[in-house]
Image (cartoon, rainbow, N blue to C red; front, side, top):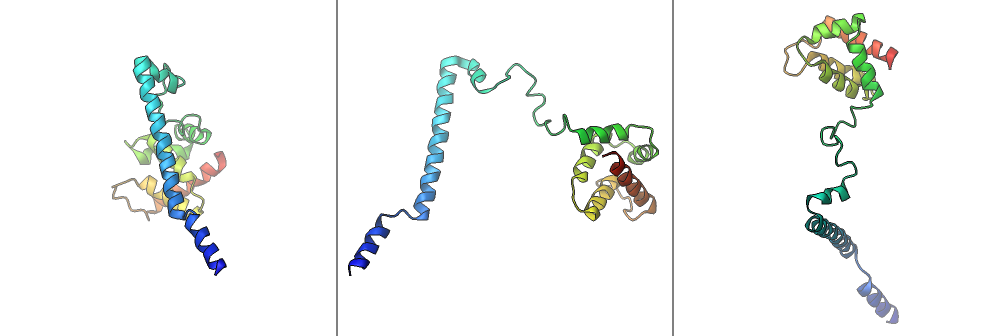
Length: 159
């Protein structure tokens, strides 16, 4: 009987997983609330200059370049862009094929396609990229497939 009594006492005072999860959520919410209150107090104290406390380079061009981190300083993308504007015969064929489509957008998408690990998946992605969204180009057209293969071989050489 004493072991049953001990078990009941232990389980009665042990927090269960649900209580622990709720406590973690309450703690997280309390921290966020305290931070928001501090920010509001700084705003009341310093006016619009409170931004200087939270933004490191407030006078810089951070707003204009927001989200460009993955594009700026990307060696692979820079190499692809340089190739696409070059006089290389494959690059010329790609530009002719693209016509009025944005070369920069194509380069960004090509850079993303290049990150696909499976060769067949990468081939399919580049083929669809060259075919273009909403275009009625036959993705089994031999000229398109030849261009895709030539482009992939060229990218293997330069990247």
